[in-house]
Length: 483
Image (spheres, rainbow, N blue to C red):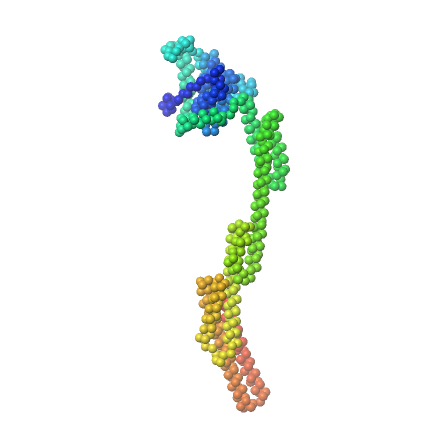
């Protein structure tokens, strides 16, 4: 239990590594399990910390660090028992300084410091008395043992401090984690290799990643036209980057190129595929725009309502445009077709109304009537014309609701035309009657032929003027309806 009572600390004691009886891989498993299950790793050594100790420890740490479902201990404590100078306070600092003399040991020290993010500490413990050394199971501590006890209390206090920082005890399934760690160490853990080799491989991989970023940046903004040039410049920059990072060591540079070159070729291929896809999309868009423009031109050239309705009823756009144009473009063209149909419907109604007016005038003015037709007779004829016009409208997709809007105006216009024509017929009838009376009077009185000719001419001129006035009035009424 910690001093504050907030942590329960579990101590896991394992056998030493690389003894004469234990296989090398078993030692690695034991060390790896201890590193992965612990918050604080304690390494118990006698007398000193040797280069081999650091070498082996680093191999264990790197092997355990490859486990993806957990992490190695964040803190490391060296306990040096029977230390020659146990009162020395800067033991660890001297060790790191000494390692600076060897490149390999310097790299190992740097790797360990990187892995144990909560720090590496060391406690030198005073030599034990012979009485404790010969003890079996239990012993009564004496005054001479107090120095040892104080050293061990320093270890205990350091453990408590480190355990405050992070605790794997918060894991919800520690047993399951232990099973996964065991399976990893037995089946998947990387083979133990010399530390220098591990560090070199890590250095090469790091250089490869940085050089790859350089190449990616070089071709990022390239175009299909500049890709080849960007590729050549990028590869040259990659080689310079590898030379700088790997200190111009040819063997490491060659190893880096072996890893990097396939990645570069893959990126180039992806870039080319990207350009090809963009070109394909651009070509498809261009073809769609061309097809859409052709459809818009055809729609613009449609001159009859019948042809426009044929396009709509037979789904011409969907049949011939759906595979080349996006749906939004299809919808836009359909709206243009709908607008065209509305325009042609208006033109159809206007044209037919003019034709109906002309038909009605021709019927009334060209037909020989014994007497001037009555208004009811004209309305009956207009009704028949409206029925026929209604049928035409329905055949041309002018619905009942649309027809109801125009029906009253059409009927009013035709009735006005009928009244005008009736007035013209009545005027004509009166003129004919007057002419007949004059002819009768002239015949009876046997007036002078010249005088007769003048009177007849004046009467005919009056009749012609009256007929012209009626015709102009009819044309004005028709123009007002059309507007």
